[in-house]
Image (cartoon, rainbow, N blue to C red; front, side, top):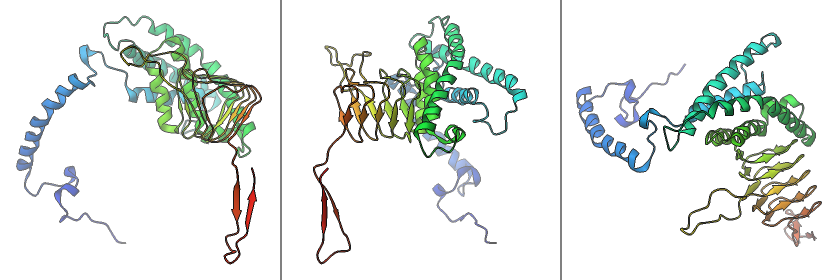
Length: 337
């Protein structure tokens, strides 16, 4: 058997520092390392005040992205017991397991929301945090019921789906939508920042970007999902199906007299019941309404409303199909579309 060995003749910068002694000796390395540290640290620390990023002023930290990610992991276990576990979850232990996981979510989410409430003023009272967390937890059964309809929509709308378990285990939209539906409750209850951190965690894992403010009806299915963007003020009806690359975005931003974007306001479109939107379609604008039972074709760019029962597509003038093997006398078949 051939064994790989580390080439000790390789340049020092290619060797892991912790795994080998410096040929020049540790004393000489310590000198330039300390000099570099002394030269770099003051400017970096000063930039925290100048640029931002200091998270421990007055001992009140900002919400932790790592902690929020762990909360999302536990939430998925609570919402889908057994589907995000390494081992089987027997029915006899489900009550104790759920109580333990929910307790961890309550504890950690309370801490992160309290930190978010104090952003900008570390002395802001955090008394509104417990009612937010309590209402959020009481809404979890409703979140599960909404997710059940989404899974049914995927099973009914995708002929490739073998079973509902396959959808839960392998369809990325389930994870993205589960976190968004949970984060939406926090958002509506007034929890700042943390809901957005939750949906961005899901965005990083699935490629599906749904703002926690978006209001989404039942039986919602995102097929494939990669590249989907759904903005904060979107209102999506029931039984809506969209494909990868779809953007439901803002057309323009209102600015104040100083040229700064005015926060809030209706910026994203509404989508009626029973609408299907095919890949890479872009629909923009807070006044744009897609009427119920409409179909938006692939690659459509739309900035105005369409009435119910509409079919919106780009029509090609001519499609040419040629025989590649007929080099001497090529034959062209032209189909007008």
